[in-house]
Image (cartoon, rainbow, N blue to C red; front, side, top):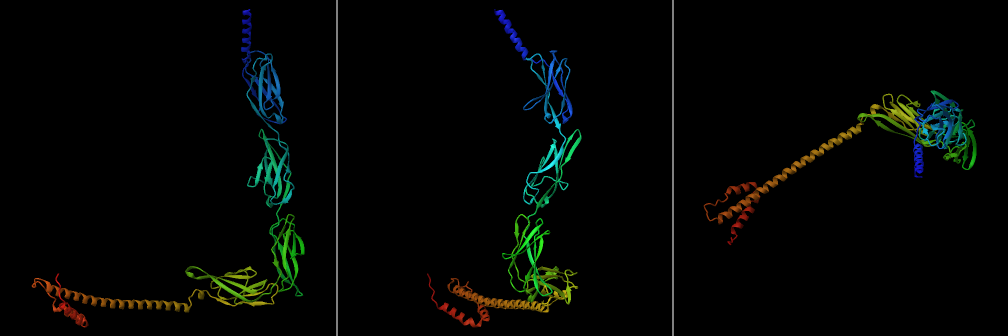
Length: 518
């Protein structure tokens, strides 16, 4: 009984040991790594050893989330297994071979190396779809285009506008088959085309879409308004009103209002129109405004006073200078202005010659209706008398002239005689004042120095005499005492005879005063 049990257990252990062993050799998968759709491709699975000498089942799998069996082959004598496959798009991915004995389920299968297959489908039939809406719209809107293909993978895309490639830039996004422009302008108008291509075995497949025309319209800008005066043959006047916008995709419709009253409207292809309105000179006839619209919104001009005032005097002409090295006058600017007039016409004259626009030494600049300027380069050629005349631009019945100004380079750069005389006189006066001040200072210093010298000398002599008397009276050794000689007093007298009696009196007083001995 125990012997039988031992034999059974030994058999089970043998079976368990055999089930955990792999008796198959190395398995190798070979074949192309790139294929084109609809091509017939051959893959080979080869088992390099088969110690069991049994038939082996070889299977080809496409690995992934859902493994797919692509084919199987039975190898009877160890020959390689071949698999012929008509390539489709889903064949792209990791391929593996699996080998297992057909008659033994307890043998672990052998797995080959992994081979990645890249499947190419040539591009075909490109077209553009506009995802953002209509093909015509106003600036500022988003434009999104998509290049769609009926076939093709591993595709490179290129976008073209008017046959020029579009590149990535701020506001322009290119991602695979999509083109996105965030805020469009009129520069984004034109014919769009996409080009798609891919490559297989050094062969490039390319398709072009048909063109899609995109129109981005500019919003009309605020119009400018102005008017000129026209006089007809019957001496009636009209205001020729111009309404013009510098920006805006035509056609643009302009409307002219006088206050709240619509005067007229007109559509233009060049963003400018002209209206004609009756006019009476020197009368205020209201306020005009232009309104412009090209389909998106209405833009309004400023209000313009409808009044034409005739020119009137006086006409003033002023000037200033430009200076070069050493403060020499090199240029002049003349300004001409009339006291009143809404539509003046200016004319400049040198002597009696009318100056037009630009000359060799001058330039006429009409800055605005209120003023005209003459730029002048001062030279010998510019010598002469200048003046300006102002008249109405719509007729020449009234002409008002300014005063005249003579210009000469040598005269301008020469100091006037009066200025020279004044400067010379001031300089001479300054020298005289300095000389007088110096003279007074010298006299004052001499006088002050002399008075101080005499007074000091007298004081020194008085003190010396006083000290000498004291020494002669109180010195125990009379032989040592030296009294002041009469010469000193004679010197003092010589210095000041008028003060000698006072000095003698002071000396007598000192001699009479009793001496107190402590």
